[in-house]
Image (cartoon, rainbow, N blue to C red; front, side, top):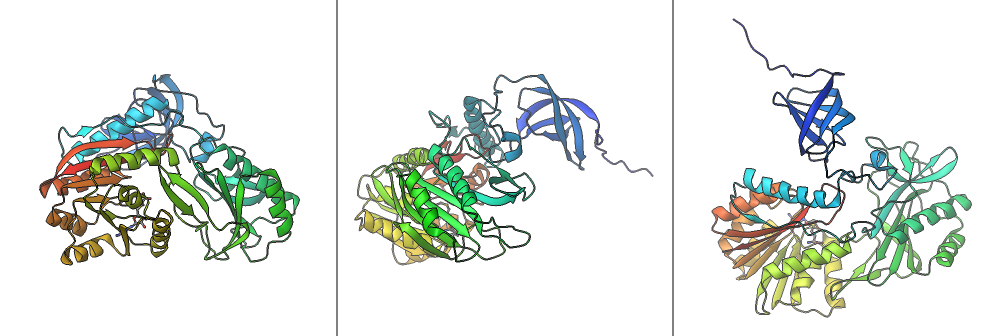
Length: 458
Ligand code: SAH
């Protein structure tokens, strides 16, 4: 008796010529040889490439791009010199319009394959007019290399820090500040933290800019409480950048990859910076979460507001509300908004922000959305609109069943992963909702990520 095994049609170190037919989750080109999938970093759909097979697994393998035999029209020269080492962006070799089109296609594919939603309208991705320098927050690890202080990013697959002069998706002022703070630290003889020995002081430099007020906060994350030459450090930063209104130190003495420790002190200036999304004002502290692309955040929230269809009479629930950004945005047009979020500190920020905007029609609760919302239902809360903005893994099934039982007129689903979105839409559709449209919004140009706002009606 003979058994047949499906042997891969390629072997390690073999050179292959292959047509690229798609893009994988990390931005790699995807091609097939006799049904066997090869992932090739740097190759684009529509291209024919020559690659060397570098890893062979049972059902898929990896190839190294050697030569582009036929080039895609969507190919462009990456802006960053360090693009191949960094890994922060995955699509810089793809023209921006092609990126937007690919993101829309990926959402459509997930709707059909995972959600089994035939014919649902996926609108063209809303992109940026200028898709560069969009990030309002920079956080770079600091290390030492050949006696000098370096700061930038970890080399892919390792914890070796590569020095970075400029990141093209960062706000210009953030780049300038990071560069200057490294320079000042070096001049003052401040030591850099070493992960292996757990010695040295400066671990991370974090810079946040509020783009609507131009206020900047600098946070020095240190392995210990004492910051030598603190006064010089502060005055040199202030001398060079008059937009800096807050300089903080965060102490993190733990052996961990988590950036921040528990203790933050203000070395100079204010404890928070203020920013606006539309008309709503937000206080941002050293550790509070805030969306990193403020231009597109406004686009995203305006879509959510439009899809909520508010007239001023509605009761709205905002599940997974974070620091209450969407809740407050909706509260401008709703009778009452209830927000729920699992992180206690985020809810504390949300309450501060509600007060800051003198909004008294919002109420926040700490807890799991899937536990708190059924309780609200029992207490007689009737929602006209439910907004959800879950993390990548999507909504808890109990929450979806509660939404189905509550029968709000509208559901607005904000999602950062269209695969789990499609899975959850199927459940909501089976429960009587209809998906009206899906609007992809490009919150993170040059990366594989895509955010979607979806409107559903009952
Ligand atoms: N809507 C916010 C944040 C969305 S991110 C904004 O636009 O800024 C998703 C949030 O869900 C995170 O803040 C996370 O802490 C929270 N979260 C995760 N699991 C949760 C759960 N089971 N119940 C409630 N919140 C949860």
